[in-house]
Length: 297
Image 1 (cartoon, helix red, strand yellow):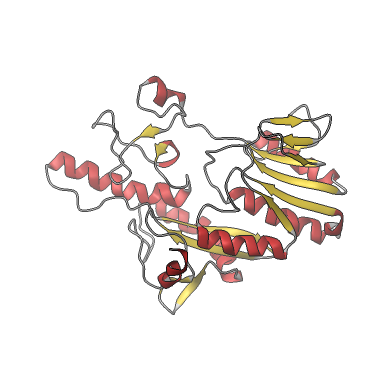
Image 2 (cartoon, one colour):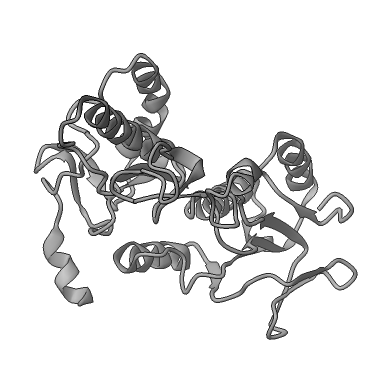
Protein backbone atom coordinates (compact mmCIF):
# COMPACT_ATOMS: atom_id res chain seq x y z
CA UNK A 1 0.00 0.00 0.00
CA UNK A 2 2.73 2.45 0.92
CA UNK A 3 4.74 1.90 -2.27
CA UNK A 4 1.86 2.12 -4.76
CA UNK A 5 0.53 5.65 -5.18
CA UNK A 6 -2.69 4.19 -6.57
CA UNK A 7 -3.49 1.93 -3.60
CA UNK A 8 -4.65 2.98 -0.15
CA UNK A 9 -6.49 1.92 2.97
CA UNK A 10 -8.29 3.42 5.96
CA UNK A 11 -7.78 0.97 8.84
CA UNK A 12 -5.00 2.94 10.54
CA UNK A 13 -4.65 6.72 10.95
CA UNK A 14 -1.57 7.13 8.76
CA UNK A 15 -3.11 5.36 5.77
CA UNK A 16 -6.46 7.08 6.28
CA UNK A 17 -4.84 10.52 6.03
CA UNK A 18 -2.79 9.38 3.03
CA UNK A 19 -5.96 8.07 1.37
CA UNK A 20 -7.65 11.43 1.85
CA UNK A 21 -4.88 13.00 -0.21
CA UNK A 22 -5.22 10.32 -2.90
CA UNK A 23 -8.98 10.98 -3.09
CA UNK A 24 -8.35 14.72 -3.42
CA UNK A 25 -5.98 14.06 -6.33
CA UNK A 26 -8.13 11.39 -8.02
CA UNK A 27 -9.59 12.91 -11.19
CA UNK A 28 -11.21 9.97 -12.94
CA UNK A 29 -11.14 6.28 -13.78
CA UNK A 30 -11.77 3.00 -12.01
CA UNK A 31 -12.26 3.31 -8.24
CA UNK A 32 -12.20 -0.09 -6.50
CA UNK A 33 -12.99 -0.95 -2.87
CA UNK A 34 -11.59 -4.43 -2.25
CA UNK A 35 -12.16 -6.73 0.73
CA UNK A 36 -8.96 -8.75 0.32
CA UNK A 37 -9.94 -11.75 2.44
CA UNK A 38 -12.00 -12.71 5.47
CA UNK A 39 -12.36 -12.14 8.34
CA UNK A 40 -13.01 -8.42 8.53
CA UNK A 41 -14.34 -6.90 11.72
CA UNK A 42 -17.38 -5.19 10.17
CA UNK A 43 -18.62 -6.37 6.79
CA UNK A 44 -20.60 -3.20 6.02
CA UNK A 45 -17.71 -0.73 6.49
CA UNK A 46 -16.41 -1.28 2.91
CA UNK A 47 -19.96 -0.74 1.58
CA UNK A 48 -20.27 2.47 3.58
CA UNK A 49 -16.95 3.67 2.17
CA UNK A 50 -18.06 3.02 -1.42
CA UNK A 51 -21.42 4.76 -0.86
CA UNK A 52 -19.76 7.78 0.77
CA UNK A 53 -17.21 7.91 -2.07
CA UNK A 54 -20.14 7.97 -4.50
CA UNK A 55 -21.53 11.04 -2.68
CA UNK A 56 -18.09 12.69 -2.51
CA UNK A 57 -17.50 12.34 -6.26
CA UNK A 58 -21.04 13.51 -7.06
CA UNK A 59 -20.68 16.64 -4.89
CA UNK A 60 -17.45 17.43 -6.72
CA UNK A 61 -19.23 17.04 -10.05
CA UNK A 62 -16.93 14.23 -11.20
CA UNK A 63 -19.06 11.14 -10.50
CA UNK A 64 -19.70 10.56 -14.23
CA UNK A 65 -15.95 10.11 -14.70
CA UNK A 66 -15.71 7.39 -12.04
CA UNK A 67 -16.45 3.67 -12.16
CA UNK A 68 -17.01 2.44 -8.59
CA UNK A 69 -16.61 -1.28 -7.94
CA UNK A 70 -16.82 -3.31 -4.72
CA UNK A 71 -14.75 -6.49 -4.82
CA UNK A 72 -15.47 -9.09 -2.14
CA UNK A 73 -14.80 -12.75 -1.28
CA UNK A 74 -18.46 -12.98 -0.23
CA UNK A 75 -21.18 -14.19 -2.59
CA UNK A 76 -22.75 -10.72 -2.59
CA UNK A 77 -22.65 -7.24 -1.10
CA UNK A 78 -23.71 -8.58 2.31
CA UNK A 79 -23.78 -11.95 4.03
CA UNK A 80 -27.52 -12.18 4.82
CA UNK A 81 -29.99 -12.71 1.90
CA UNK A 82 -32.66 -10.09 2.76
CA UNK A 83 -30.11 -7.37 3.46
CA UNK A 84 -28.00 -8.45 0.49
CA UNK A 85 -30.95 -8.07 -1.90
CA UNK A 86 -31.77 -4.60 -0.62
CA UNK A 87 -28.17 -3.40 -0.62
CA UNK A 88 -27.55 -4.86 -4.08
CA UNK A 89 -30.54 -2.91 -5.44
CA UNK A 90 -29.24 0.27 -3.80
CA UNK A 91 -25.77 -0.22 -5.27
CA UNK A 92 -27.24 -0.87 -8.71
CA UNK A 93 -29.30 2.34 -8.52
CA UNK A 94 -26.11 4.26 -7.81
CA UNK A 95 -24.18 2.51 -10.57
CA UNK A 96 -21.83 0.75 -8.16
CA UNK A 97 -20.74 -2.68 -9.40
CA UNK A 98 -20.06 -5.73 -7.23
CA UNK A 99 -17.53 -8.45 -8.07
CA UNK A 100 -18.31 -11.39 -5.72
CA UNK A 101 -16.32 -14.52 -4.80
CA UNK A 102 -12.99 -12.74 -5.33
CA UNK A 103 -10.24 -13.39 -2.78
CA UNK A 104 -7.22 -11.20 -3.40
CA UNK A 105 -4.00 -13.01 -4.31
CA UNK A 106 -1.92 -10.22 -5.84
CA UNK A 107 -1.87 -6.47 -6.39
CA UNK A 108 -0.15 -5.90 -9.73
CA UNK A 109 1.04 -2.31 -9.32
CA UNK A 110 2.63 -2.11 -12.76
CA UNK A 111 -0.54 -3.25 -14.52
CA UNK A 112 -2.87 -1.65 -11.96
CA UNK A 113 -4.95 -4.77 -11.49
CA UNK A 114 -6.11 -6.98 -8.65
CA UNK A 115 -5.68 -10.71 -9.25
CA UNK A 116 -7.38 -13.65 -7.50
CA UNK A 117 -6.20 -17.31 -7.49
CA UNK A 118 -8.28 -18.31 -10.55
CA UNK A 119 -6.58 -15.43 -12.45
CA UNK A 120 -9.71 -13.29 -12.51
CA UNK A 121 -8.61 -9.65 -12.74
CA UNK A 122 -10.12 -6.34 -11.68
CA UNK A 123 -8.40 -3.23 -13.09
CA UNK A 124 -8.08 -0.08 -10.97
CA UNK A 125 -6.90 3.50 -11.12
CA UNK A 126 -7.33 3.88 -7.38
CA UNK A 127 -7.84 0.86 -5.13
CA UNK A 128 -8.85 0.90 -1.46
CA UNK A 129 -7.79 -2.40 0.13
CA UNK A 130 -9.41 -3.80 3.29
CA UNK A 131 -6.96 -6.42 4.62
CA UNK A 132 -8.03 -9.49 6.61
CA UNK A 133 -8.17 -8.73 10.32
CA UNK A 134 -6.36 -10.67 13.01
CA UNK A 135 -7.15 -10.89 16.70
CA UNK A 136 -4.26 -10.94 19.17
CA UNK A 137 -1.10 -13.08 19.04
CA UNK A 138 -1.28 -13.19 22.85
CA UNK A 139 -4.43 -15.33 22.58
CA UNK A 140 -2.78 -17.84 20.26
CA UNK A 141 0.43 -17.91 22.29
CA UNK A 142 -1.67 -18.85 25.32
CA UNK A 143 -3.25 -21.72 23.37
CA UNK A 144 -6.70 -20.13 23.57
CA UNK A 145 -7.16 -19.01 19.98
CA UNK A 146 -8.20 -20.22 16.55
CA UNK A 147 -4.83 -19.47 14.85
CA UNK A 148 -6.08 -16.03 13.80
CA UNK A 149 -5.81 -14.62 17.31
CA UNK A 150 -9.50 -14.87 18.18
CA UNK A 151 -10.43 -16.60 21.43
CA UNK A 152 -12.39 -19.81 20.96
CA UNK A 153 -15.47 -19.59 23.15
CA UNK A 154 -19.08 -20.68 23.54
CA UNK A 155 -21.09 -18.21 21.47
CA UNK A 156 -23.90 -18.12 24.07
CA UNK A 157 -21.87 -17.76 27.27
CA UNK A 158 -18.60 -16.29 25.90
CA UNK A 159 -16.73 -18.78 28.10
CA UNK A 160 -13.44 -20.08 26.73
CA UNK A 161 -13.59 -23.58 25.23
CA UNK A 162 -10.10 -24.20 26.64
CA UNK A 163 -10.16 -22.66 30.12
CA UNK A 164 -13.49 -22.13 31.97
CA UNK A 165 -11.95 -19.29 33.99
CA UNK A 166 -11.55 -17.14 30.87
CA UNK A 167 -14.21 -15.23 28.92
CA UNK A 168 -13.91 -13.37 25.61
CA UNK A 169 -15.84 -10.42 24.23
CA UNK A 170 -15.57 -7.71 21.60
CA UNK A 171 -12.99 -7.84 18.84
CA UNK A 172 -11.20 -10.78 20.44
CA UNK A 173 -14.12 -13.25 20.59
CA UNK A 174 -14.43 -15.98 17.95
CA UNK A 175 -18.20 -15.79 17.50
CA UNK A 176 -20.26 -15.59 14.27
CA UNK A 177 -21.10 -11.89 14.42
CA UNK A 178 -19.58 -8.53 13.58
CA UNK A 179 -16.88 -6.94 15.71
CA UNK A 180 -19.00 -3.83 16.23
CA UNK A 181 -19.40 -1.55 19.23
CA UNK A 182 -23.00 -2.60 19.85
CA UNK A 183 -21.93 -6.24 19.83
CA UNK A 184 -19.31 -5.62 22.52
CA UNK A 185 -21.87 -3.68 24.57
CA UNK A 186 -24.44 -6.48 24.45
CA UNK A 187 -21.73 -9.10 25.10
CA UNK A 188 -20.67 -7.18 28.21
CA UNK A 189 -24.16 -7.51 29.69
CA UNK A 190 -24.06 -11.26 29.11
CA UNK A 191 -20.52 -11.62 30.42
CA UNK A 192 -21.35 -9.85 33.69
CA UNK A 193 -24.39 -12.08 34.20
CA UNK A 194 -22.45 -15.26 33.39
CA UNK A 195 -19.53 -14.25 35.57
CA UNK A 196 -21.61 -13.26 38.58
CA UNK A 197 -23.75 -16.38 38.32
CA UNK A 198 -20.64 -18.51 38.41
CA UNK A 199 -19.22 -16.67 41.40
CA UNK A 200 -22.45 -17.01 43.38
CA UNK A 201 -23.22 -20.58 42.34
CA UNK A 202 -26.53 -19.80 40.67
CA UNK A 203 -27.74 -20.49 37.13
CA UNK A 204 -27.26 -17.63 34.66
CA UNK A 205 -30.54 -16.27 33.36
CA UNK A 206 -29.07 -14.36 30.41
CA UNK A 207 -27.26 -15.95 27.48
CA UNK A 208 -25.85 -14.39 24.35
CA UNK A 209 -28.17 -14.57 21.31
CA UNK A 210 -25.81 -12.72 18.98
CA UNK A 211 -27.74 -9.44 19.09
CA UNK A 212 -26.15 -6.81 16.85
CA UNK A 213 -27.47 -3.38 15.99
CA UNK A 214 -25.85 -0.74 13.84
CA UNK A 215 -26.37 2.02 11.31
CA UNK A 216 -25.08 1.84 7.74
CA UNK A 217 -24.26 5.28 6.36
CA UNK A 218 -25.47 5.46 2.74
CA UNK A 219 -24.57 9.05 1.93
CA UNK A 220 -26.59 12.21 1.28
CA UNK A 221 -27.53 12.52 4.96
CA UNK A 222 -29.24 9.14 5.11
CA UNK A 223 -28.55 5.79 6.76
CA UNK A 224 -29.95 2.29 7.12
CA UNK A 225 -30.47 0.58 10.46
CA UNK A 226 -30.13 -3.18 10.90
CA UNK A 227 -30.96 -5.24 13.97
CA UNK A 228 -30.36 -8.99 14.08
CA UNK A 229 -28.91 -11.94 16.01
CA UNK A 230 -27.49 -15.42 15.44
CA UNK A 231 -30.81 -16.88 14.32
CA UNK A 232 -32.68 -13.93 12.77
CA UNK A 233 -31.19 -11.99 9.89
CA UNK A 234 -31.89 -8.27 9.29
CA UNK A 235 -35.45 -7.62 8.08
CA UNK A 236 -37.54 -4.49 7.41
CA UNK A 237 -39.70 -2.98 10.12
CA UNK A 238 -39.63 -0.31 12.82
CA UNK A 239 -37.29 0.09 15.78
CA UNK A 240 -37.39 -0.10 18.75
CA UNK A 241 -41.20 0.09 18.92
CA UNK A 242 -43.74 -1.48 16.54
CA UNK A 243 -45.48 1.05 14.25
CA UNK A 244 -44.19 4.05 16.25
CA UNK A 245 -40.52 3.33 15.60
CA UNK A 246 -39.23 6.00 15.36
CA UNK A 247 -36.36 4.35 13.46
CA UNK A 248 -36.89 2.33 10.28
CA UNK A 249 -35.16 -0.98 9.68
CA UNK A 250 -33.53 -1.69 6.31
CA UNK A 251 -34.76 1.62 4.92
CA UNK A 252 -32.76 4.72 4.04
CA UNK A 253 -33.93 7.66 6.15
CA UNK A 254 -32.56 10.95 7.41
CA UNK A 255 -33.75 10.02 10.90
CA UNK A 256 -31.47 6.97 10.88
CA UNK A 257 -28.57 9.24 9.97
CA UNK A 258 -29.44 11.58 12.83
CA UNK A 259 -29.62 8.53 15.09
CA UNK A 260 -26.07 7.65 14.06
CA UNK A 261 -24.91 11.19 14.89
CA UNK A 262 -26.72 11.11 18.24
CA UNK A 263 -25.02 7.86 19.22
CA UNK A 264 -21.82 9.65 20.21
CA UNK A 265 -23.84 11.24 23.03
CA UNK A 266 -25.55 7.96 23.90
CA UNK A 267 -22.09 6.43 24.11
CA UNK A 268 -21.42 8.49 27.21
CA UNK A 269 -24.29 6.63 28.88
CA UNK A 270 -22.66 3.33 28.01
CA UNK A 271 -19.36 4.37 29.58
CA UNK A 272 -21.28 5.17 32.76
CA UNK A 273 -22.89 1.73 32.72
CA UNK A 274 -26.36 3.00 31.84
CA UNK A 275 -28.55 0.82 29.57
CA UNK A 276 -29.91 2.02 26.24
CA UNK A 277 -33.68 2.46 26.66
CA UNK A 278 -35.71 -0.34 25.00
CA UNK A 279 -32.55 -1.97 23.59
CA UNK A 280 -31.02 -4.86 25.50
CA UNK A 281 -28.66 -7.77 25.11
CA UNK A 282 -31.46 -9.99 23.78
CA UNK A 283 -32.88 -9.00 20.41
CA UNK A 284 -36.56 -8.07 20.36
CA UNK A 285 -38.75 -9.22 17.46
CA UNK A 286 -41.17 -6.35 18.11
CA UNK A 287 -41.74 -4.25 14.99
CA UNK A 288 -39.88 -6.64 12.69
CA UNK A 289 -41.52 -7.94 9.50
CA UNK A 290 -40.37 -11.50 10.07
CA UNK A 291 -42.86 -12.89 7.55
CA UNK A 292 -40.52 -11.78 4.77
CA UNK A 293 -38.19 -14.61 5.76
CA UNK A 294 -40.70 -17.12 4.35
CA UNK A 295 -39.61 -16.01 0.88
CA UNK A 296 -36.05 -17.15 1.61
CA UNK A 297 -36.76 -20.70 2.79
